[in-house]
Image 1 (tube, rainbow, N blue to C red):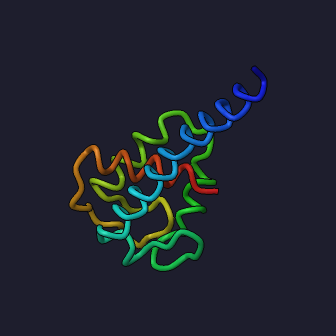
Image 2 (image 1 turned 135 degrees about the vertical axis):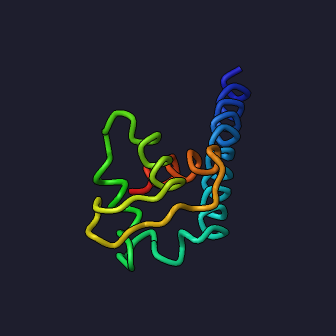
Image 3 (image 1 turned 30 degrees about the vertical axis):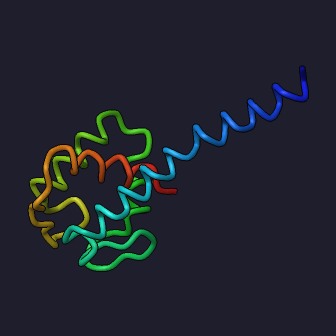
Length: 106
């Protein structure tokens, strides 16, 4: 019985992780398809802050997904210096997906 259960549990665990990787890849592809990548990089500050810096700044902040999604969609100025971030051509759902992905970066 153990010989059957252990591989089944391992398979179940492996299959449950796969959608997470797919979601991350989809979010990264979305990021690259939008103007975001012209000013932001995951690891390195460019015109705007590195996305990992953004994730660190808002880690554990209540409402961070909604806050970042709004800033992604509507733009902002003064949060990371005086360089304005323009509004982006994203839907509410895309903005939320991008915000969740950014906050997941370590």
